[in-house]
Image (tube, rainbow, N blue to C red; front, side):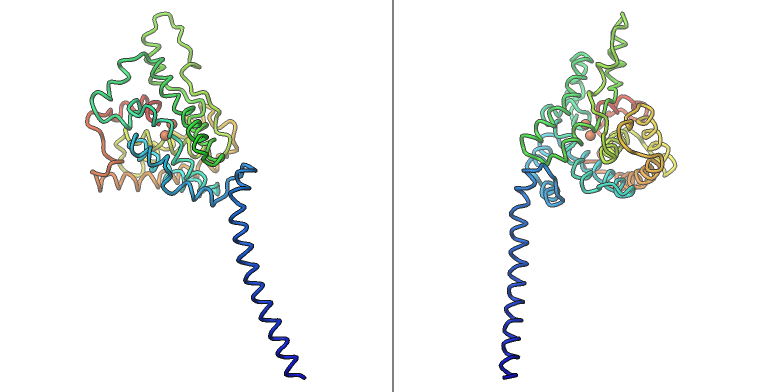
Length: 302
Ligand SMILES: [Fe+2]
Ligand SMILES: [Fe+2]
């Protein structure tokens, strides 16, 4: 009888383990099946969804094809933003993916953006139209980007990165040009600012900084860590003074950590630019304005 009891016990134990295994597999299976539906239904973006769109999505392939300069700019921005976000404990994966898509709206008219101007004809694009028109075209990449993201059903969490990455920044190059051409002084600054909103989250603010730093660094010949540090600090300061961080919770302490992180990443990038001068993202287009024209390029390139 005791042998019978032991056999019975072992048998039920085996069944128990088997059901445990089946249960585990079924639960994971059901969760994976339900997750995308729940994500859509509740508008939640999970890490799985983010990973899915961070591998070569059709929109990114299009961006690389139509606006290669913007594509490489976005990759660099994502590298800068991801480490900086990680350094302050913000959502680094979200910022990285947001950076990939932040400028997709430039695909419509790529050659109006400095990073895609490869020919002399491209570089003359803006001289043929009024500063007002230039400003409209440049500013429109934000609106177009949001529309594209919605059409392609990108995760909702990516939209704010497209919408807020310029905040209400002034397109100073075209603003100055319009003022110079207007004898009556009627040009309004508001007409030359991005419509906003300003960054609403720390993640969005990190992207804004990484974006500006990447675009501006292309026009600079930065040598040594000291110069890079001053350059990064100046950009952070400009954005802060312009009130771009007024609507998010960035602290001064976080700004200092961000500054250190951007300096480190940019130093590595600059080193790569020197070491491999033929890489597409590092190539300086012949005749591209150098140091003294940093200011204009802020508003045209980022
Ligand atoms: Fe942009
Ligand atoms: Fe950008």
